[in-house]
Amino acid sequence: MKKIWMLWALALLLMASCHGGDSQQTARIDGMEFDSIVADTTIRLVADDGQSPTCHIRLNIQYAKGGKEAEALNDSLIHGGLLVPDYLALGKDRLSMQTAIDSFIKRYAADYLKDYAPLYRQDKEHAGSYMCEYVVNTSTRNGRDNVVNYVAETYMYGGGAHGTHQTIARNINPKTGHMLQLSDVFVPGYEQGLSDKIVEGICRIFDAENLDQLREQVIFEGVTPYPTDNFVLGKDDITFIYVEDEIAPHAAGEISVSIAYSDLDNLLKRE
Image (cartoon, rainbow, N blue to C red; front, side):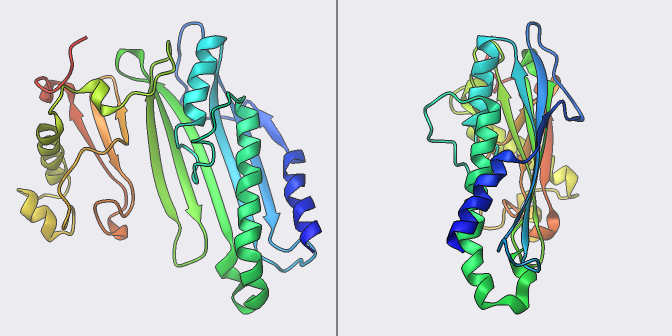
């Protein structure tokens, strides 16, 4: 049976991937264009058991085309933690986007088979607990100073009462492929001032007057407010995205707060 699992995992690489998948938004950069790779794969936990649970993986990944600059941008994306688990983070080799996606799917499937199959064999009465789904849809847009905003909308389910939705955002200089951090955008010592602005924005969303009232709603409860590194540098504002369960209970969902650059003037670096 172990041999069957190995052959099944290997067969993933032969399953259909196609270019040109539709995405909701696509950035426009001179000398560069964006295409997408779509991979849609279902792995049965035990290949010869037609009743066994499955893992469904669907990826719609935008990538850049257009010479060295596009290759550098794609390299940042591949190693930028957009796919979870981040199998590719430590790799040093520059891979094509197709090779990176194939590698991720193969590893994800292998881990599913390794971790879930022994449990399912001992607990077939609860087969639903071993169902798995992983879906990622990506989009790009033009942000501040023509930075490329790259956004991945992710859904993950691995058994249990509910799945998890996450929005993961990255901001990339298309000329260099450099992935911008908060320290690239804000002056040294920005943390407290920016945190205060974020709290003000979240207070408006939840009809609270201050941090204490937010904490009464179990937002930032027991946590010092902080600017997340999951952000989008828009043309007119910056949006900070706190994923499910990060600063509030799961029922609150994802919390996003946008702050106009005009309200951050003393914190922003000058070009």
